Length: 339
Image (cartoon, rainbow, N blue to C red):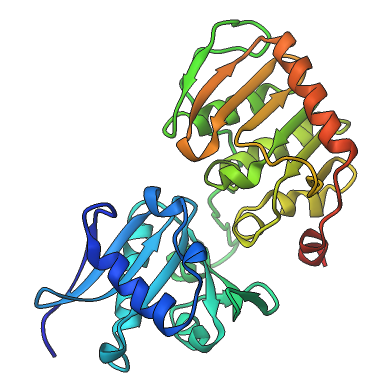
């Protein structure tokens, strides 16, 4: 076989990515163009597989560990190249500390992903008119051989040494802000947003409100955020956490999802979907107690601001949230997930 190469390429300047996906998904499988191209292409890591410079396959990796748009041109199928492409993507993800990988698999390709260690985590569902199933891969399930050996002495007593279990700790954050004290506006971007979310949550005492977390899955479906919320519940068992979604789609429901937290603490965590007749707004915001606010005015841009003591803004956005919450709905996709 010709020499095969898989490389990370730029989305804007690599036309082959779009050419391959057009041939495979739009022309061959009939996926509507409006569904094929989305905002995630701008921020994803894209992979291009070539044989002696000839493009033949592609895939993309999102910041939350979601692998998608895996495609190999028809002339190159049946040669094991899809599996090789996936292994390259998985190795890249692991090298960047991702221990959970997710994908929405077409049913006909399910066997490929199972060979790579992915397991099913949903029932069948339709996406773009094609049967799919959600699948997950977790590094910890493959690391059993790396457990430390048990130390003992003989004869007589048998002292056993086991390393202490690693406690769940807060995300290491080096930010000089205190909830309820600093009034200044702090600029937030993709590299600092998660730190600000976790820092506010680590200081919360009573309530957390999130609007449109599904527009910022890259930030809210993170183990760090779930850890911070679990610790809030542990220290304040009467706290209240409310999350209002625009859509309860597959990307939000998979992985380190807030829905898992709702499943475990249903009396404290409530997730609902905005009424379809209400306008879907472009921003994402989080309100913490009566002081903290984090705002992304246009979620797709991943830029915004945080304020650690802004009771006026918290009241104003809190009223806005309560109005939407009053007409919100319990979504069937969330109920199926909880079952």
